[in-house]
Image (cartoon, rainbow, N blue to C red):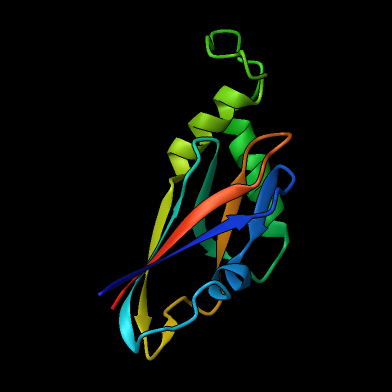
Length: 136
């Protein structure tokens, strides 16, 4: 059995944001065993799982990804939506639009320090739509 939940994440500033609790709150019934899938419906933002204990990790991710995919690269052609748009698409493609987490004993089987990140790559982002699928 598959159950789908849709949710709109509020617009957030550019950067990395831990959204674990907001995502968990969208599911009204957790099976004892199963699989959690989350998909973001956008090409200039991504989702991933990483450390949720130290906020410096979020800052370091932003610094690193901006270092490897900077804005204002003179060879980019897709620039009509601003200098952050094409780099945002590249960053989103590198990180990805979906995550999967096992559900064990009615809970996500995240590691001790892990959390779900929204990776927002636009300078002036809009709300972001996600679909959560629970496979039981």
